[in-house]
Length: 375
Image (cartoon, rainbow, N blue to C red):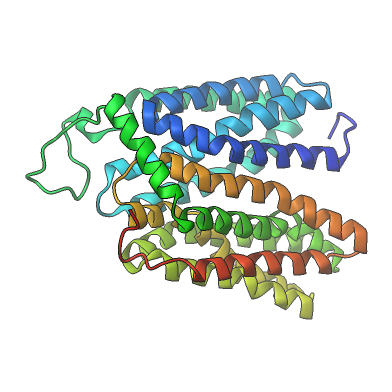
C-alpha cells in the first residue's frame, strides 16, 4: 500500500467506516426529519470533501482512521439515510421505481469508483487518488444540491401519485411538526417490528459482507486463478446491481415481506454449494444466485417502511435500521477473518455467513403482514 501498513489495519479502517456510518444513521435521520434533507445533505457534502482531502494528506495510521473512518463514515450515513427518506416524500405511488433507480445508480457508482481509484493510485499516487474524487465529486454534489428540493411543494408540485384535489402545502418544520415527529418515533419504537427490522438488517449485512470482502480470497485459496476469482466477484456485483433496481419495484407491488423472504433464502442456500465443490462453475453459480439475494435486501427497507408507517417522517426510523446495517457490515469481515485465521481455512467463515443469514430469514418470517400499516 506504499505506507507499510498491514492489510488487517487497512481492513479495520473500512470496518470502522461502516461502524461509524451505522452509529451516525439515527442522528442523521433525526436531523433530516427535523431540519430538512437538503440542509443535511449539505452537511454530508462538506464532510465528504473534508474527509477525501484530509485522507489524501495522511501519513500515519491514526489519520487514516480519523479521516477515512470517522469523517467519511459520517458522510456515508448522510447519503444513506436522509437522501433515501427524502425520496419517499416525493412519491406516494411508484416509490419502488424511484427507489430502485436510485439504488441501481448507487451500485453503478460504487462499481465504477473502485477501478477509478486503482487507476488514479497507479498513475498519480495516494494524494490525488483522494483529492480528485473529493474535489470533482464535491463540486458536482454542490451543483446538484443547488437544484435539489426536499419538498415538492417548494416547486408548486404534489408528490407523485397524490390526489389532484390535495392542497399543495409546504412541510412546516416548526415546533408542532417536530413534536409530532418525536411522538411518531416513540410510537414506532414501542412496536417489536421496529427492533426486528434493525436486527434483520444486522444479520443480513453481517452475513453477506463476509463474502463481499473474502470471495476473491476464498476462490484463490480454493485453487482458482485470480482472474477467474475476480470474474466471479464482478459477476456478483453486476447481478446485485440489477437486483437493486428490480426488487423495490416488486416489493412495492407484491409486499416487501415475501420479497425479503426470497432474498434471505438466496443468501442462506448458495453458500452450501461452496461447501460441496470448489470448481470454477460453482463460484459463478454462487455469484449469480447469491447476488440476487445480496442486491435485494437493502433496497427493500424504504419500501417496507412506507408499507408499515405510511407517510410519516421515516428518516429517524430508517436511520435506526441503517445502524444495524453499519454494525453488521463492520463485524462480518472481522468475525469471518478471525475464524479463517483460527481454523486455517474458510469453511468456518462460510458456515458463519449461513448461520447469520438464517437468523435473518427467521426474523423476516416473524414480521407482520405489510398489507396494513402498523401505526
